[in-house]
Length: 195
Image 1 (cartoon, rainbow, N blue to C red):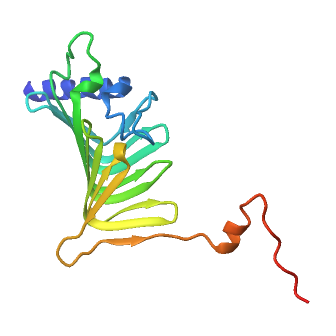
Image 2 (cartoon, rainbow, N blue to C red):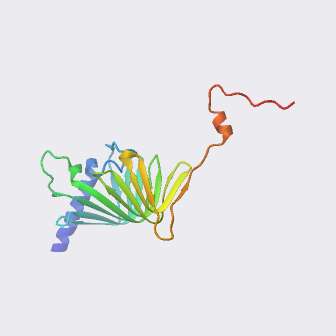
């Protein structure tokens, strides 16, 4: 009997998360920190919830999509406060979600950057995304930062990359060629002709 109640509660939680776009940390599931009003779709092999301990687990082949944001992982745990099944009247449901932790081959794609890590943790209140695991990386255009711990302070536009043990921090910055830069101006001089 307890198992059946657990599955029903999980199903209700899953429907609730899909129906309320504001229930998800708006900062991370959009390409900027301002959030998105687009619906969120989360698919997984299994959903388990625990309203007493205030978490919901999406397990196996997890994929979360909202607009231009996509995240895949082996597992995703959402932490929340209050009563997930009965949020207070007049209070936005999104205020109850505190953080999420994605684990196992975490891959995030936005229109500004992509990330790869073993674990990604996002805290709603601070708008901070922390990537951990060997060779965690963030790629933006031709630029890449790699390290075992990367902290993206998204609302402030800052990144802190930390090494650990023998694994050091690595950054690769691409430079545009001089020819490309020279051709981008409106009053570009033509190259001198050879005699």
